[in-house]
Image (cartoon, one colour):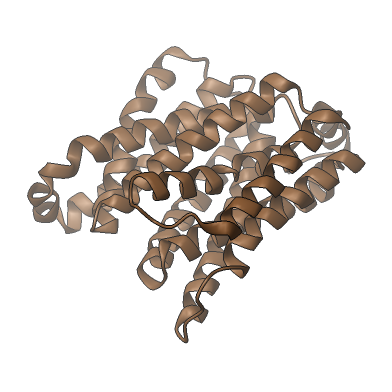
Length: 297
């Protein structure tokens, strides 16, 4: 989809260390992402949860669609591709949550993407991070992976859940890379965000309203919290898309997935899940990665 001059231009946009403002924005996005995932996790029926999140995201996207400039036409193929990948991501994530524990599936799905995004960005647009970027992405990825590999009691039925989580992680890497290129070509990060969340957020709700409308009526008690989760998902991903116009895709993907650490903290405080020594060590390793990403090219 990209000619060589465009690829070189897009790669140059992400060159250099991440500015502190970008680091701060992505960390805020990570907190918001962990929050809306905790909201979705707290709703028993996952189809209802993701339907409400989609509805909230789509509704919140309408002001952006109306008020922000229309994305430039050269970004439309990326936008359409991203919508399709996002739908696959939601379906795989729901399957992962049905098959495995949240504390196992969420870190594996989210922790898979940073290294894959770094590789895809290098191959697609020649965006190769410097030594500090590679070290930072590696440290963050190692910290996130340790949440799955250390301190988790493995069960005989974990295999399908892990495969679903890994597949989910690959879709995360795919849409992160596609959106990273698309938003840079769009000329309007807000417009791109609005159209993406409107189109993607409408798909699952339309299916649910057509097939399980009665279930939604019976779930009115969680509508408010579910729709709030959707609004938070829009804000979280919108901040990430803005950041992708200001820095390299791989390091930003790694920073975004620190949501796993914030999710573990939320789980400890809200759901009374044990934080434990492995998560403390993982948090320290992730924090070191963040410092390295902010310090040098």
